[in-house]
Length: 396
Image (cartoon, rainbow, N blue to C red):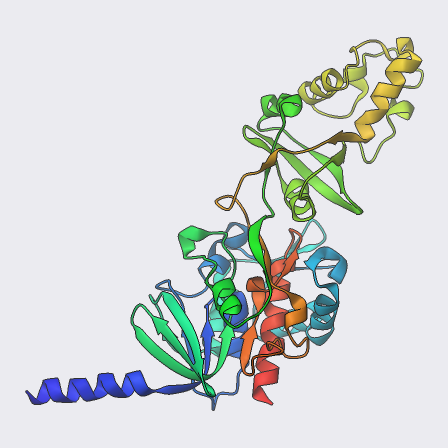
């Protein structure tokens, strides 16, 4: 009887506990924010998973592409003024200094991508250690968020929580196997904030019938330049049985919504310099895998002949090897997307704090905000920068 009585009191007190800050989401932005909140604050981190940082854990093949040697607003889609302010407040160099001070060993790949040298556990360990003052409220689905007077009430699958300040760091819809959802957008809309619905980004693209020849090359890759609108993405492209993928395509998907894009299959060469005076076959002169060079010639309706025999008409067609234009059919969807495009519109937030302009003490950070970076560490940089800005504002 007495045991039951005291148990009921404990449960009642837990229910009535009022946090100073609750962070919804234990990913990169949420942990970065928690790590830098004043240790005197009563902080709770709510996550639907049994562990925090699950996306950080698996990203980059388990080594986490944290940031890039060159980071600017030009590498992002969204409110570029918001991005610029965030990068000025907490830059790539600031992030690297933070990681270095805390013993995270980094390595640079392809002269631009920063990865954890050994494992993503390095950065996860630092963030968890610095967030040790926060109460981990795990395995809790967020059902509803309300604000009564100056207090937020979060209804979860394990009861209700109350807090003075609420940070929404729930991410996007990609990686649904890790609990990803659009709950952050639902919360924002319930408080009257304008949002852009999530769509897949950093994702492979499907093809129209005229480009099905690319599917026959599944497994091959080559270095290309892909132009989408005014953006040129320079990286490897991978031919897949569903369409095209690889780093260049994933970044291009961020900027493509409909219409044509263009591929330069020989960005470092000029096709006419290569064939000039040559007696070899075209497919032998083109510095690509033979199977690929022949497929491109077929797609351009150019016969694989001796270079010296090429007619003016054939040259016009051959020139398109530097500007192969086509319209993708779509993309591989959320199940294959690295991130989500969309989120809370930047103009709804105070750039200096990430607080909603018209809802006091409500903050949005990370992927739930309508800021999406190219492939190459940009999205984690945004997560860390926005999380840091939010923590600093709350601490004031």
